[in-house]
Length: 198
Image (cartoon, rainbow, N blue to C red; front, side, top):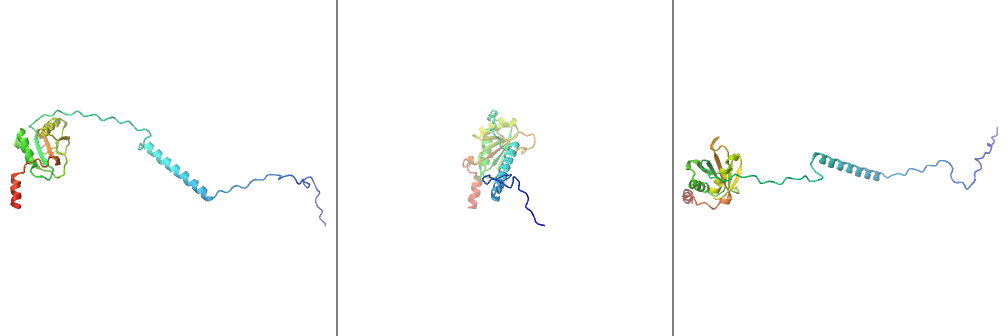
């Protein structure tokens, strides 16, 4: 059976000057893989930095505005009083020999009993500044009096030397520093011993 062409209709005769007819979608532009990776990396860095900053801000490690600090006020100091009822431990914290015994003589001359003053060497020889230590705030005046009796020294509240004379005994500790080195007369016993050994 012979094939006959289909009948012609209005779609067969299209004018030649007509543009495209129907739905035509443009192709999706393809982004390069490197650009996508770069933007992903930048976004990750920004998010991590924001998280760290937010955490530090929330925990108080950083502050957007500085917090006002109170200005330090001078603490009241007790008035110096010479109180020879205190027992005194003298420790020489310098390499120079004879400073502790010379300081003991100074205190005895100031009114302390020789039985209430003990002198010896400290565990170090590089202590910078002569300091009087007291273990109770009530002892500050006596500590300042002792510092005045030796011609001046720092005064510090500390439990480091508490109880050297026993509990409940009023006591002070005087640590001789390098600022007093060269100020003592040589101890005759030490000088004789050095001469015998030399």
